[in-house]
Amino acid sequence: MQYNTQREQLVMPEYGRGVQMMVDMAVQIIDRAERQRCANAIVKIMSSLLPSTTSKEDNEHRLWNHLARISHYKLDIDYPVSIVPQEEVQAHPEPLPYPMKNIKRRHYGYLVEQALDYAKTVEDSEVRQYITECVANQMKQDLFIWNRDSMDNALVAQDIERYSDGKLGIDLDNFTFETVGESPLQPTEGGKKRKRKR
Image 1: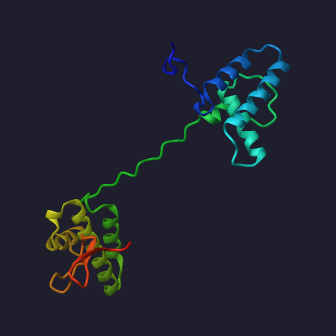
Image 2: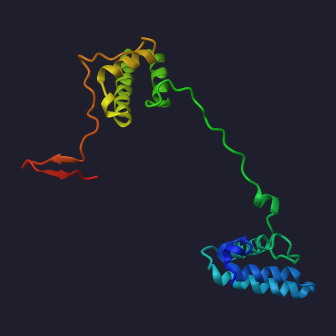
Image 3: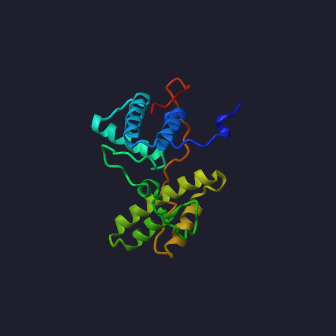
């Protein structure tokens, strides 16, 4: 007994090994007219195996291109639709360059550094302070996610001064951080806790 794992790998497994064997046989048919009739029959079978969810024209175009692909583009017939070249089907897109950034504190991320760099360029002192405080809240949230034991208001203030070369800062005596890491259970009037609605 021969297992499928011991056989040649299918080009398009969704059509099954039966279709693959029929296409392989069609490629070997010498008479061109008979080969064309065989190809038409195979496409009808393929259509019944995978019903179309698109228009008839799109489905026919897809099936004939699949037939060419299954035959490794060796089936010499008169295709009723334009066939996508093999080189185009097998072409791989160029790999995208990975944006490597030199981040001082990876647990804060690159966007925090960008926000603080932007805040340094803002001339309006109130807007600059507002941006700094928003970033401070985000930094505390990042510390909570990274390591709860290191979550410290003084550390956030110190890191802001370090990032901005002393140009930005928050006054810990007059600034209150937003609460981070709240429990999803909130107390109700009776003292019991209930789940918060999302």
